[in-house]
Length: 303
Image 1 (cartoon, rainbow, N blue to C red):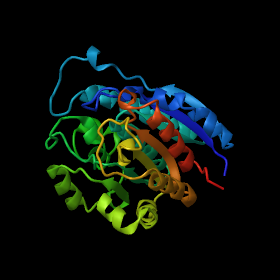
Image 2: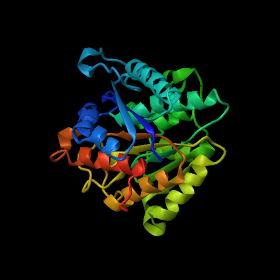
Image 3: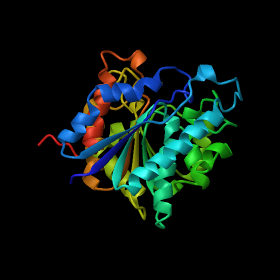
């Protein structure tokens, strides 16, 4: 089914401890994203980038949630841009940037459907659960906090982006691929009863059954699903250019199968790719892979 697609870049590395992911949107565009989406038959437009100040221009601030005001402001702008794309009948494709951008993208999506008395689900493909709060975070890096904020936990500047909280409910939240979880995150995940498919479960069951279950959970009584894909979900053998690599991740084909199954479900409301870091990449291998994964999420098939 052909769609209107709106690309929105978020050159954000304020939430990360490792510099360079602010160049991710450029790397993905250089790899031919716009042209490739158009070749699928979709109507594609590029909304450019959200404004994000470089860390060098920002005074030192709280170590518990680094660059909190600036990240909050960027997420407010992103939320408005995502909602605007939806109002125009387009499917937003958001390019990161570190994973703190999900606070803004999901806020915009949830705001749009909230006005229609509907809620949204989320599938979080990531090596990390990203459900820390400023109180528990070992680093103070906000890219480890976005899922907590979307569920209504953490700093008010993050939880209340777009003027309401929570953005998603625990029963419609799924994490896939987790293999590095902090102690505080483990406690919150258990208390909220979030469904987490670890890499161990993926190994035992296979990607097909896991994705089927994830789609069912995230789409239950919702308008559809926000798919957010941190490139460190994949093993660094396939995706070396990422913000926080973790060995033992998903393979090339497992990752494509996940996105293909998502597209087949017909329930995808927005697609987000985060944490592409060209500084640690080889000949834009990870940027090119990001393009391929987005295409699979938008319906590209082998036959």
